[in-house]
Image (spheres, one colour):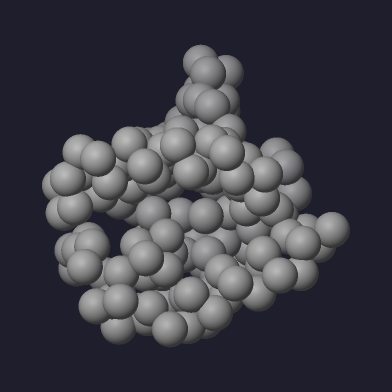
Length: 149
């Protein structure tokens, strides 16, 4: 099995939305990870974001289907946020960098990647690179809004 890749909402959206300008590159990167036996790791915060966006753009049934498929898929693992992980994310990523506009979801993602030795994220969000991680597909484009086609 190849190394794990972290799945951020920005990359996930690009994979599923054909209207996204980076869809082809993101979908190819995603397929390559899976075909090479890679593990895709994400957090419950990313799952919650994707579920909300799916429901908003495709309806409740599509949101439920997303969750059911995700939980059945052995190539995807979800990391759940407990108090300790949240505290570590705040102390390592939010508190020391007040000038950066990081969300708690960003900080938790970075802390999961740091503690699990995950060096690459499927993300279009440049904050991952700023935090010292590699992103697929390269280079990320700025995202202005999340849209699911």
